[in-house]
Amino acid sequence: MKRFYLPAILVACMFFSGCETAQQIVNNLPNATGSLTNDQIVQGLKEALTIGTQNSSSKLSAIDGYFANAAIKILLPPEAQKVESTLRSLGLGSTVDKAVLSLNRAAEDAAKSAAPIFVNAIKQMTITDALGILKGGNNAATNYFKGKTTAALTDAFKPTINAALSKVSATKYWTDMFTVYNKFATTPVNTDLSGYVTGKAIDGIFFQVSQEEAKIRTDPAARVTDILKKVFGSSQAKS
Image (cartoon, rainbow, N blue to C red; front, side, top):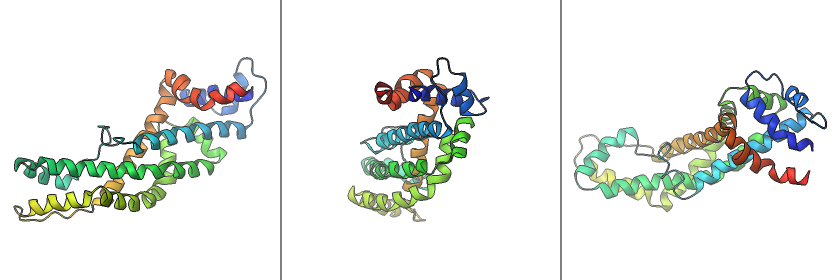
């Protein structure tokens, strides 16, 4: 039955900023059958974070995971927005649209490699890290992942995005777009397309992770049904 109390422990510590340690919450639980060790508390948090980051990766790696999400949809780089406006005015909007879609498809392809990187960061989490997340601010878990995974995500995403850009003809659309534009422009535009898409793709991953974290911290209904019930439901049934 000890596992049954893990959701309450995690929610209480994440929702009430005055909580000093997770163990204090355990001791105050009604009808508790025994105390949980710090290791058990950390394991519960790790399981919840694993599910949350896997959900994030799964959502973004699906078709339209980026493209249909206005908050993280990858648009043309700022320096290329004048290009976009010019090409649309010349009746070449479909070329621009294909280029934008290709950028997002590349990000969706790369997002498939995110989950193992997050899982590795979770496995390396110490008791101090975990209690810091439980006691931390609204983005404590997201900030932990940014510090631990950004370099690895960049290394994993960039070659995947390079390959994906070629696979979905993004490079071709990009070249076509700027070839046409440069016929009318006095200064050619030269952009590191894969680097730009990689950065935006990683921003999107962390945005989605922050959304998962927010559900646990601020949405009581989500804590009960969407996140914690999914994470601990099967283990409760087996208790």
